[in-house]
Amino acid sequence: MMRLSWLLAIPVLLGCGTHAVFDDTDAPALVAAKTMDLNSDGTVETIQVLFSEPIADETVDAADFHLDLIGAVTFEVRTNGDRIHDDVIHLSFPDGFLRADAEPLLDYTPGSLEDVSGNALGPVVDFPVQAGPLLP
Image (cartoon, rainbow, N blue to C red; front, top):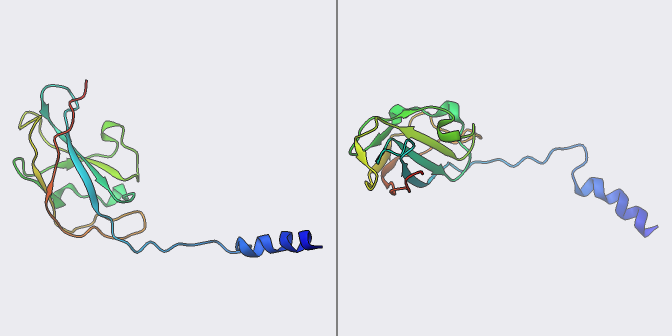
């Protein structure tokens, strides 16, 4: 009889008939950023940006980002094999302006960027971008 009561308790413990919902109220944060030389010409043309959680790609507006030494950047989904709604985006700019060993600073002015739960990224000032390894 004890075995049967445990079996009946399992659906209650698992929330039978209900869905466990976790409200994500935490805003995403920048975790890391590095330069990338995608065409192996010795200068970088992309910054890979890592966030603390998945980002809704349709909310990314490149105009909200500014990279010192370069200025304006662009954003395209799937740059360098990036997946939609993951924790990485790639910001691109014209090739030939930034040496592979450069370590610029990245700024973000709050705009539309949100995580997949709808939490907005706050302002980012002078976030250090590390020089990434050159691709073979």
